Image (cartoon, rainbow, N blue to C red):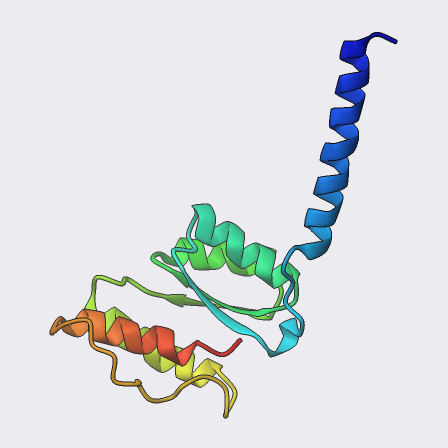
Length: 139
């Protein structure tokens, strides 16, 4: 065994050791059944993958999709704990409708039902979107 092979083996052992303990410390959701998580942009990409992953972990997921096609596709591959809503964050009516749907989805006592007075400016869409996210801050 030459020196280069010994260094490679040592590197693999140290890397494996670090990876093993990193996985052990990886954050986990302690009680996924009590979590309600709102995810926007679930038609595709990162939002879609995150919704599927959290659903597989047992969390209640509220997946906001821009299109009905995105909603249908998610509902076909996920459990009944995943609820889809249609949301266009640039449209005030859509944000208002999503807010109403989410407050109906959440069980009583879950989430913040009243906005907490934060202000991001005078844009009504921004204010409604902030209120929407405050409703879902329940984990």
